[in-house]
Image (cartoon, rainbow, N blue to C red):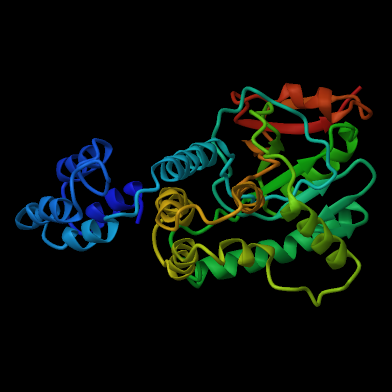
Length: 347
Protein backbone atom coordinates (compact mmCIF):
# COMPACT_ATOMS: atom_id res chain seq x y z
CA UNK A 1 0.00 0.00 0.00
CA UNK A 2 1.34 3.42 -0.90
CA UNK A 3 1.85 6.42 1.32
CA UNK A 4 -0.99 8.39 -0.22
CA UNK A 5 -3.26 5.35 -0.08
CA UNK A 6 -2.36 4.91 3.56
CA UNK A 7 -3.52 8.42 4.43
CA UNK A 8 -6.82 7.73 2.68
CA UNK A 9 -7.14 4.49 4.66
CA UNK A 10 -6.58 6.27 7.95
CA UNK A 11 -9.42 8.65 7.13
CA UNK A 12 -11.68 5.75 6.14
CA UNK A 13 -10.91 3.84 9.33
CA UNK A 14 -11.78 6.74 11.59
CA UNK A 15 -8.51 8.57 12.15
CA UNK A 16 -8.86 12.32 12.48
CA UNK A 17 -7.32 14.68 9.96
CA UNK A 18 -4.58 15.59 12.43
CA UNK A 19 -3.77 11.95 13.12
CA UNK A 20 -3.64 11.17 9.41
CA UNK A 21 -1.31 14.12 8.91
CA UNK A 22 0.95 12.79 11.67
CA UNK A 23 1.21 9.49 9.85
CA UNK A 24 1.81 11.27 6.56
CA UNK A 25 4.56 13.42 8.11
CA UNK A 26 6.12 10.33 9.65
CA UNK A 27 6.10 8.64 6.27
CA UNK A 28 7.69 11.64 4.60
CA UNK A 29 10.41 11.73 7.27
CA UNK A 30 11.10 8.03 6.79
CA UNK A 31 9.87 7.04 10.25
CA UNK A 32 7.38 4.46 8.96
CA UNK A 33 7.70 2.21 5.95
CA UNK A 34 11.22 3.38 5.16
CA UNK A 35 14.50 1.53 5.30
CA UNK A 36 16.24 4.55 6.84
CA UNK A 37 14.95 3.89 10.35
CA UNK A 38 16.71 0.95 11.83
CA UNK A 39 15.39 -2.57 11.62
CA UNK A 40 12.01 -3.93 10.60
CA UNK A 41 11.21 -4.59 14.29
CA UNK A 42 11.89 -0.97 15.16
CA UNK A 43 9.53 0.19 12.46
CA UNK A 44 6.89 -2.26 13.68
CA UNK A 45 7.28 -1.03 17.23
CA UNK A 46 6.75 2.52 16.10
CA UNK A 47 3.56 1.49 14.31
CA UNK A 48 2.29 -0.41 17.33
CA UNK A 49 2.85 2.63 19.55
CA UNK A 50 0.02 4.32 17.64
CA UNK A 51 -2.46 1.48 18.10
CA UNK A 52 -4.03 2.99 21.23
CA UNK A 53 -4.73 6.16 19.28
CA UNK A 54 -5.65 4.88 15.86
CA UNK A 55 -7.29 1.51 16.52
CA UNK A 56 -8.09 -0.17 13.24
CA UNK A 57 -5.64 2.06 11.38
CA UNK A 58 -2.92 -0.37 12.55
CA UNK A 59 -4.01 -2.80 9.84
CA UNK A 60 -3.35 -0.25 7.14
CA UNK A 61 -0.13 0.83 8.79
CA UNK A 62 1.29 -2.68 8.98
CA UNK A 63 0.29 -3.35 5.41
CA UNK A 64 2.38 -0.38 4.36
CA UNK A 65 5.65 -1.63 5.87
CA UNK A 66 8.24 -2.20 3.21
CA UNK A 67 5.95 -1.00 0.38
CA UNK A 68 7.30 2.48 -0.19
CA UNK A 69 6.62 3.56 -3.79
CA UNK A 70 6.89 7.26 -3.03
CA UNK A 71 7.51 8.82 -6.45
CA UNK A 72 4.81 6.75 -8.19
CA UNK A 73 2.27 7.44 -5.46
CA UNK A 74 2.91 11.17 -5.49
CA UNK A 75 2.46 11.17 -9.25
CA UNK A 76 -0.82 9.26 -8.92
CA UNK A 77 -2.12 11.65 -6.29
CA UNK A 78 -1.13 14.63 -8.45
CA UNK A 79 -2.80 13.09 -11.52
CA UNK A 80 -5.99 12.37 -9.57
CA UNK A 81 -6.08 15.92 -8.20
CA UNK A 82 -5.51 17.34 -11.69
CA UNK A 83 -8.38 15.22 -13.04
CA UNK A 84 -10.72 16.49 -10.32
CA UNK A 85 -9.79 20.12 -11.06
CA UNK A 86 -10.35 19.56 -14.78
CA UNK A 87 -13.78 18.04 -14.12
CA UNK A 88 -14.68 21.22 -12.24
CA UNK A 89 -14.03 23.26 -15.41
CA UNK A 90 -16.41 21.24 -17.61
CA UNK A 91 -19.84 22.54 -18.53
CA UNK A 92 -21.92 20.20 -16.39
CA UNK A 93 -25.35 21.61 -17.27
CA UNK A 94 -27.92 18.94 -18.15
CA UNK A 95 -28.39 18.74 -21.90
CA UNK A 96 -32.16 19.21 -22.15
CA UNK A 97 -32.07 20.46 -25.74
CA UNK A 98 -30.31 18.90 -28.72
CA UNK A 99 -29.14 21.80 -30.87
CA UNK A 100 -28.01 19.70 -33.84
CA UNK A 101 -27.14 21.80 -36.88
CA UNK A 102 -29.18 24.83 -35.78
CA UNK A 103 -26.96 27.91 -35.67
CA UNK A 104 -28.09 29.70 -32.54
CA UNK A 105 -27.64 33.42 -32.00
CA UNK A 106 -25.05 34.15 -29.31
CA UNK A 107 -26.10 36.36 -26.40
CA UNK A 108 -24.00 37.53 -23.46
CA UNK A 109 -26.81 39.33 -21.63
CA UNK A 110 -28.84 36.34 -20.43
CA UNK A 111 -26.91 35.41 -17.31
CA UNK A 112 -25.47 32.02 -16.44
CA UNK A 113 -28.58 30.08 -15.45
CA UNK A 114 -29.17 26.82 -17.31
CA UNK A 115 -32.59 25.51 -18.36
CA UNK A 116 -34.58 24.32 -15.38
CA UNK A 117 -36.61 21.49 -16.87
CA UNK A 118 -37.67 19.83 -20.10
CA UNK A 119 -40.45 21.42 -22.13
CA UNK A 120 -41.97 20.91 -25.59
CA UNK A 121 -39.57 22.16 -28.28
CA UNK A 122 -40.25 23.78 -31.63
CA UNK A 123 -37.14 23.93 -33.81
CA UNK A 124 -37.22 26.53 -36.57
CA UNK A 125 -34.34 25.52 -38.79
CA UNK A 126 -32.97 27.40 -41.77
CA UNK A 127 -35.12 25.33 -44.18
CA UNK A 128 -37.69 23.41 -42.11
CA UNK A 129 -39.64 23.42 -38.86
CA UNK A 130 -39.77 20.51 -36.42
CA UNK A 131 -41.83 19.82 -33.35
CA UNK A 132 -40.32 17.39 -30.84
CA UNK A 133 -37.89 16.23 -33.55
CA UNK A 134 -40.54 15.55 -36.21
CA UNK A 135 -41.12 17.63 -39.32
CA UNK A 136 -44.21 19.81 -39.46
CA UNK A 137 -45.49 21.62 -42.52
CA UNK A 138 -47.77 24.63 -42.39
CA UNK A 139 -48.64 26.54 -39.23
CA UNK A 140 -51.94 24.65 -39.11
CA UNK A 141 -50.10 21.34 -38.73
CA UNK A 142 -47.97 22.74 -35.94
CA UNK A 143 -51.03 24.14 -34.19
CA UNK A 144 -52.67 20.72 -34.27
CA UNK A 145 -49.64 19.10 -32.64
CA UNK A 146 -49.38 21.84 -30.03
CA UNK A 147 -53.07 21.53 -29.18
CA UNK A 148 -52.68 17.80 -28.54
CA UNK A 149 -49.64 18.41 -26.32
CA UNK A 150 -51.38 21.19 -24.42
CA UNK A 151 -54.37 18.95 -23.70
CA UNK A 152 -52.18 16.05 -22.55
CA UNK A 153 -50.05 18.25 -20.27
CA UNK A 154 -53.12 19.81 -18.68
CA UNK A 155 -54.57 16.36 -17.96
CA UNK A 156 -51.34 15.06 -16.44
CA UNK A 157 -50.96 18.12 -14.22
CA UNK A 158 -54.58 17.80 -13.07
CA UNK A 159 -54.02 14.13 -12.23
CA UNK A 160 -50.84 14.88 -10.25
CA UNK A 161 -48.58 12.70 -12.38
CA UNK A 162 -45.50 14.86 -11.89
CA UNK A 163 -43.14 14.43 -8.95
CA UNK A 164 -42.12 17.71 -7.38
CA UNK A 165 -42.97 20.89 -9.24
CA UNK A 166 -45.44 20.42 -12.09
CA UNK A 167 -44.57 22.06 -15.43
CA UNK A 168 -46.23 25.30 -16.49
CA UNK A 169 -48.45 24.23 -19.39
CA UNK A 170 -47.98 27.65 -21.00
CA UNK A 171 -44.26 27.18 -21.56
CA UNK A 172 -42.29 25.77 -24.48
CA UNK A 173 -38.86 26.23 -26.03
CA UNK A 174 -38.20 27.88 -29.39
CA UNK A 175 -34.90 26.84 -30.98
CA UNK A 176 -34.34 29.22 -33.90
CA UNK A 177 -31.57 29.31 -36.53
CA UNK A 178 -29.94 32.71 -36.87
CA UNK A 179 -30.89 32.96 -40.59
CA UNK A 180 -34.64 32.32 -40.15
CA UNK A 181 -36.73 35.26 -41.44
CA UNK A 182 -38.95 37.11 -39.03
CA UNK A 183 -42.18 36.05 -40.75
CA UNK A 184 -41.49 32.36 -39.95
CA UNK A 185 -40.82 33.18 -36.31
CA UNK A 186 -44.06 35.15 -36.09
CA UNK A 187 -46.04 32.30 -37.70
CA UNK A 188 -44.78 29.80 -35.11
CA UNK A 189 -45.32 32.19 -32.20
CA UNK A 190 -48.89 32.89 -33.32
CA UNK A 191 -49.63 29.15 -33.56
CA UNK A 192 -48.22 28.68 -30.07
CA UNK A 193 -50.28 31.55 -28.71
CA UNK A 194 -53.53 30.22 -30.20
CA UNK A 195 -52.99 26.80 -28.60
CA UNK A 196 -52.25 28.06 -25.08
CA UNK A 197 -48.43 28.21 -25.14
CA UNK A 198 -48.28 31.85 -24.17
CA UNK A 199 -44.89 31.88 -22.41
CA UNK A 200 -42.28 30.72 -24.93
CA UNK A 201 -38.57 30.72 -24.10
CA UNK A 202 -36.42 31.81 -27.02
CA UNK A 203 -33.16 29.87 -26.84
CA UNK A 204 -29.72 31.35 -27.45
CA UNK A 205 -26.16 30.17 -26.94
CA UNK A 206 -23.86 31.83 -24.41
CA UNK A 207 -20.43 33.14 -25.43
CA UNK A 208 -17.91 30.30 -25.75
CA UNK A 209 -16.20 29.23 -22.55
CA UNK A 210 -12.74 27.71 -22.12
CA UNK A 211 -11.87 24.75 -24.33
CA UNK A 212 -11.90 21.77 -21.98
CA UNK A 213 -11.84 18.95 -24.53
CA UNK A 214 -8.83 16.69 -23.89
CA UNK A 215 -6.59 15.44 -26.70
CA UNK A 216 -8.15 12.67 -28.76
CA UNK A 217 -7.49 9.09 -27.69
CA UNK A 218 -8.44 5.60 -28.75
CA UNK A 219 -11.63 6.04 -26.73
CA UNK A 220 -12.75 8.82 -29.08
CA UNK A 221 -12.12 6.56 -32.06
CA UNK A 222 -14.29 3.86 -30.50
CA UNK A 223 -17.04 6.36 -29.75
CA UNK A 224 -16.95 7.61 -33.34
CA UNK A 225 -17.21 4.03 -34.61
CA UNK A 226 -20.22 3.35 -32.35
CA UNK A 227 -21.97 6.49 -33.60
CA UNK A 228 -21.35 5.47 -37.22
CA UNK A 229 -22.72 2.00 -36.51
CA UNK A 230 -25.79 3.47 -34.86
CA UNK A 231 -26.42 5.86 -37.76
CA UNK A 232 -26.14 2.93 -40.18
CA UNK A 233 -28.62 0.84 -38.18
CA UNK A 234 -26.01 -1.60 -36.88
CA UNK A 235 -27.33 -1.72 -33.33
CA UNK A 236 -25.55 -4.91 -32.21
CA UNK A 237 -22.73 -3.10 -30.43
CA UNK A 238 -20.02 -4.41 -28.08
CA UNK A 239 -20.09 -3.45 -24.40
CA UNK A 240 -19.78 0.23 -23.61
CA UNK A 241 -16.22 1.46 -24.32
CA UNK A 242 -15.78 2.65 -20.74
CA UNK A 243 -16.20 -0.79 -19.20
CA UNK A 244 -12.66 -1.95 -19.96
CA UNK A 245 -10.99 1.27 -18.80
CA UNK A 246 -11.30 0.38 -15.12
CA UNK A 247 -10.64 -3.36 -15.27
CA UNK A 248 -7.53 -2.86 -13.10
CA UNK A 249 -9.14 -0.28 -10.81
CA UNK A 250 -11.99 -1.90 -8.85
CA UNK A 251 -12.55 1.17 -6.61
CA UNK A 252 -13.70 3.19 -9.64
CA UNK A 253 -15.91 0.32 -10.78
CA UNK A 254 -17.50 0.27 -7.32
CA UNK A 255 -17.97 4.04 -7.48
CA UNK A 256 -19.91 3.77 -10.74
CA UNK A 257 -21.95 0.95 -9.25
CA UNK A 258 -22.86 3.17 -6.32
CA UNK A 259 -23.87 5.99 -8.67
CA UNK A 260 -26.10 3.59 -10.57
CA UNK A 261 -28.24 2.88 -7.51
CA UNK A 262 -28.33 6.42 -6.10
CA UNK A 263 -31.93 7.54 -5.69
CA UNK A 264 -31.30 10.95 -4.15
CA UNK A 265 -28.56 13.53 -4.43
CA UNK A 266 -26.52 14.76 -7.37
CA UNK A 267 -24.76 11.92 -9.16
CA UNK A 268 -22.41 14.24 -11.06
CA UNK A 269 -21.22 15.87 -7.82
CA UNK A 270 -20.76 12.45 -6.25
CA UNK A 271 -18.69 11.31 -9.23
CA UNK A 272 -16.46 14.37 -9.12
CA UNK A 273 -15.90 14.01 -5.36
CA UNK A 274 -15.26 10.29 -5.51
CA UNK A 275 -13.21 9.55 -8.59
CA UNK A 276 -9.96 11.10 -7.32
CA UNK A 277 -9.79 9.06 -4.10
CA UNK A 278 -10.91 5.95 -6.02
CA UNK A 279 -8.06 6.34 -8.50
CA UNK A 280 -5.54 6.80 -5.69
CA UNK A 281 -6.95 3.73 -3.98
CA UNK A 282 -6.00 1.57 -6.98
CA UNK A 283 -2.69 3.32 -7.64
CA UNK A 284 -4.04 4.98 -10.83
CA UNK A 285 -4.01 1.67 -12.70
CA UNK A 286 -5.88 3.21 -15.62
CA UNK A 287 -5.08 4.98 -18.87
CA UNK A 288 -5.74 8.49 -17.63
CA UNK A 289 -5.93 10.12 -21.10
CA UNK A 290 -8.69 7.68 -22.07
CA UNK A 291 -10.45 8.23 -18.75
CA UNK A 292 -10.50 11.96 -19.49
CA UNK A 293 -11.98 11.29 -22.93
CA UNK A 294 -14.68 9.08 -21.45
CA UNK A 295 -15.62 11.60 -18.76
CA UNK A 296 -15.72 14.43 -21.28
CA UNK A 297 -18.18 12.51 -23.46
CA UNK A 298 -20.20 11.51 -20.40
CA UNK A 299 -20.42 14.83 -18.53
CA UNK A 300 -19.61 17.81 -20.72
CA UNK A 301 -22.47 19.71 -22.38
CA UNK A 302 -20.98 20.84 -25.73
CA UNK A 303 -24.00 23.01 -26.63
CA UNK A 304 -25.24 24.93 -23.57
CA UNK A 305 -28.20 27.23 -24.14
CA UNK A 306 -29.86 30.14 -22.35
CA UNK A 307 -33.54 30.96 -22.41
CA UNK A 308 -35.31 34.32 -22.72
CA UNK A 309 -38.92 33.90 -21.66
CA UNK A 310 -41.51 36.35 -22.99
CA UNK A 311 -45.23 36.37 -22.23
CA UNK A 312 -47.35 36.73 -25.36
CA UNK A 313 -50.37 38.99 -25.03
CA UNK A 314 -52.69 40.66 -27.54
CA UNK A 315 -52.68 43.88 -25.50
CA UNK A 316 -48.86 44.01 -25.25
CA UNK A 317 -46.82 46.54 -27.21
CA UNK A 318 -46.31 45.25 -30.78
CA UNK A 319 -42.86 44.26 -31.95
CA UNK A 320 -43.14 44.85 -35.71
CA UNK A 321 -40.32 44.08 -38.14
CA UNK A 322 -40.11 43.52 -41.91
CA UNK A 323 -40.92 39.94 -42.97
CA UNK A 324 -37.43 39.15 -44.22
CA UNK A 325 -35.50 40.37 -41.18
CA UNK A 326 -33.15 37.54 -40.15
CA UNK A 327 -33.47 36.27 -36.61
CA UNK A 328 -29.89 37.27 -35.82
CA UNK A 329 -31.03 40.90 -36.17
CA UNK A 330 -34.64 40.58 -35.00
CA UNK A 331 -33.67 38.83 -31.77
CA UNK A 332 -31.82 41.94 -30.61
CA UNK A 333 -35.21 43.56 -30.03
CA UNK A 334 -35.96 41.00 -27.32
CA UNK A 335 -34.09 41.69 -24.07
CA UNK A 336 -34.31 40.52 -20.45
CA UNK A 337 -36.46 43.63 -19.89
CA UNK A 338 -39.04 42.39 -22.44
CA UNK A 339 -41.64 40.82 -20.18
CA UNK A 340 -44.66 40.97 -22.50
CA UNK A 341 -44.79 41.30 -26.28
CA UNK A 342 -46.89 40.85 -29.41
CA UNK A 343 -44.83 39.79 -32.43
CA UNK A 344 -46.13 41.01 -35.78
CA UNK A 345 -44.90 41.42 -39.33
CA UNK A 346 -44.68 45.10 -40.27
CA UNK A 347 -43.26 47.24 -42.98
